[in-house]
Length: 375
Ligand SMILES: *[C@@H]1O[C@H](CO)[C@@H](O)[C@H](O)[C@H]1NC(C)=O
Ligand SMILES: *[C@@H]1O[C@H](CO)[C@@H](O)[C@H](O)[C@H]1NC(C)=O
Ligand SMILES: *[C@@H]1O[C@H](CO)[C@@H](O)[C@H](O)[C@H]1NC(C)=O
Ligand SMILES: *[C@@H]1O[C@H](CO)[C@@H](O)[C@H](O)[C@H]1NC(C)=O
Image 1 (cartoon, rainbow, N blue to C red):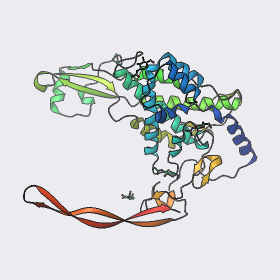
Image 2 (cartoon, rainbow, N blue to C red):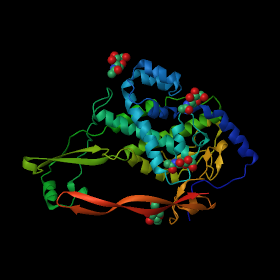
Image 3 (cartoon, protein in one colour):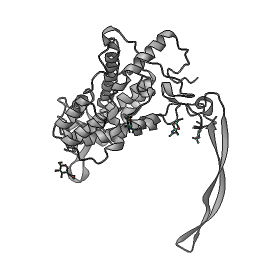
Image 4 (cartoon, rainbow, N blue to C red):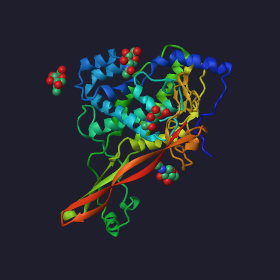
C-alpha cells in the first residue's frame, strides 16, 4: 500500500485557516532565492559589484550579499550548487506527483516551497548539501582562499581487511602496515563552515514568533543537508610502489565522483521520515529532534489537482506506467482518475546487414509504442 507522505486530504478547519494566513504573511522571507543563480548567473565574473547587483535583483538576501562581497571566490561554486539542487531534486522526484518542477520558478516560488511543507524541507536540505559538496570540490581544486585539502585524521587508516577488497595480496600488505594518510582529502568541514556562513545569512521573515519559527525550521533542514554530505565521505586509496606493486597505499577521505546525488539519496530517506513540528511560543524548535531529521510545519496537499493557493500543479497529463504499482504507476499517479493510452509510431533502423567488408545497410521498421497519460 503506497502512501505519499503527508498527503491526506484534510478539510480546513478554523485553526488551519488562521495557520495558513500566518504562513502567507511570512512567506516573503524565503532564503532559497539564491537557487535562481543556477539559471541566471552562469559564467558570471564575481566581484563586489556583481554581489550587490544580485542583491538588488532579489537573488541574494542582504546578509548573503555581504558574505558574497567578502569572498566572491566562493560564488561560482554556489552557482553550480544551485544547478545541482534543481537537477538532483527533479531526478529524485521525477516519477512522483510532486516532481520538483516548481524549483525552476526561483526566486518566485509557489506555496509548495514557501509554506513549510515536507517538499520545502527537502529542497532546503538538498541546497545545503549541494553547496557543501561544490565548496569542498572548490577547496580540493585550490580555487578557494579559505580552504584546501583536509587535514588528515589523527587515527590510523583502517587496515585493508576493513575495506571491501578481499585479495590475499592486500592481506599481506596489512601486516606490513603500508597504509598512510595522504592525497587530498575533501575538506568537508571547512566547506560546511563556508556554506553555513552563506546559508544562515538570511534573516527571519518579519519579527513575529511565526517567522522566527519558520526560520528555525529552515535552518534546521539546512544543517541536516550539510550533515548528509559529511556522512557521505568514504575512504579512497591509491597504490604506489615499483611497477604497481602497491607496496605503499595512500588513503584519504573523499566524496567520490558521483556528486551531490549521493547526499540526495540520503535526504530522500529523511524526506519520507520527516517529522511535523508545531509552532511554539518564542519561535524556538522543540529540542527533541535529531539533527539529521527533516522537519516540516505544514501538511502537503496530495498534489492531485491544480491548486494555486497550495502550490499544487496537479497530475493531469502526466505520463504514467500502466503496469507499475509504484509512485509512477497510473493507479497512484493519476489519483484514481484513470488514464488514456496513446499509441505512437516509432521508426527504427532494423534488419541491418553487412555488405562486402565495410558498410551496413538497414531497413526502416515501424514499431508502435504505448504511452499512458493521466486524465
Ligand atoms: C572580472 O572582473 C575583474 C574586476 O571587475 C576584471 O579586472 C577582470 O578583467 C574580469 N575578468 C573577466 C574574464 O571578465
Ligand atoms: C519574479 O518576480 C519579480 C517581481 O514580481 C519579477 O520582476 C521577476 O521577473 C520574476 N522572476 C522570474 C524569474 O519570474
Ligand atoms: C512535472 O509535473 C508538471 C505538473 O504535473 C508537468 O507539467 C511537468 O511536465 C512534469 N515534469 C516532468 C519532467 O515530468
Ligand atoms: C513500468 O513498470 C514496470 C514494473 O515496475 C517496469 O518493468 C517497466 O519497465 C516500466 N515501464 C516503463 C516504460 O518505465
